[in-house]
Structure formats: structure tokens, C-alpha cells
Image (cartoon, rainbow, N blue to C red):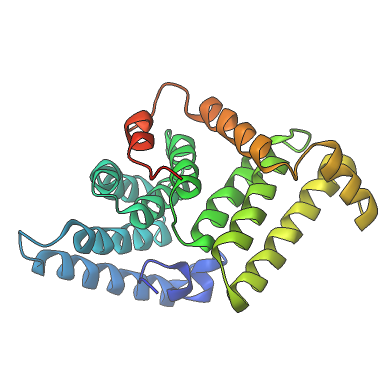
Length: 235
């Protein structure tokens, strides 16, 4: 687990109630991360430097210094994509989304596209797609699309207990979306809803997700997706 994983921070940070003691812990962590960054050799690998900067960004968000977190993490995205460091690139986009700045919704779109396109950790991609669910109006179909893609990714990329845990989570997200979308409470009606909206047709599902991301990001992509697609393995 990288240090910037939220699980490495105090419970009060996770719940959004940072008291004086937790604040002091975060300030100490920030100082340690910055010392680590200063100690890196100038020729340190990009991914090593990125891990430290992501730790700094995570801590700054915990300290509610969100503009500073954005400024710390934003310059990482394009170099990480160029280096094919997909996991770190998506984690950077997640931090940028949580930094709640003007372009944070663009960061979400970029993170979802990278997380779905490349074999990053299932948990990371599910997290990004769950952000989309949270951002989508209750009556819009987009939340259902994001929830079903998250469920598909969880089943495809995770194994064992992680798979069981993630698919349980994504099933709960699907149920929540169905409840708010159409007031659905029972499994039979849920299955009918999934069939009606063709949410179990993966080809159509990913096409719909692609259109959603185009709507979110528009013409403001930070990298050339066509060039990246051309480098994908041909199956």
C-alpha cells in the first residue's frame, strides 16, 4: 500500500473531521514527505518521484490545502502517461478530482478513461467510476452506466477475497443507483431494469461510457488518446 492510500491516514481524516491531534499528524507526515522529496537524486525515476508527490498531494488534501494539492499533482499527469505509468496516472487524477478545483471534473474524466483502458488496480478504477456515480444527477442514465462498468471491472481484474469484496461493493452501488433512478427495491425488478437499459451488453455499455467521457472532457484532453490507442496491443 502506498502512503497516499487514504487507509494510511487517521480515521478522523477519512470522516472529514480533522482535530488538532490529527492535524499535527498530517503536518508531520507532510514534512516527512517533503524531506523524502528533497533527498531524491536528480536522476531518480519518475515513478519514484511521483509516489512522493502523490503522498504530498494526499496529505495536503487532508489538511484542506486543496489548491496546493492541485498545483503539486497536476504536472505529473502527462509525464506519467508518457511513461505508461498507468496506475500512478490514475491515482494522480483521483487526487486532482478530490482537490475540488475548477478543472477537477476534467481530471475525473481523464482518470476514468485511463482506468478503464489500462490494467490498473481494480479498486482504483472502481473508485473513479464511483465518483462518476456520485457526480451524476439522480434521473440520468450515466450513473447506471458507470456503476455497471465498475461491476464488470471488479469481476474482471480482481481475484479471491478482493474480488468478492469489490463485487459486493459494486452490487450495492448498482442497487443504490436503481433505487434513486426508478425506485427499485427488489432483485427481480432490478434484473428487469438492467435488461431494459441494456446494461448487461458490455459493448454498448463501454460505448455509452465513452460518450459520457467525451461529454465530460469535451475538447480539453490533456493527452492524445488516438496516439495511445494506436499503442494498445491488438487482440
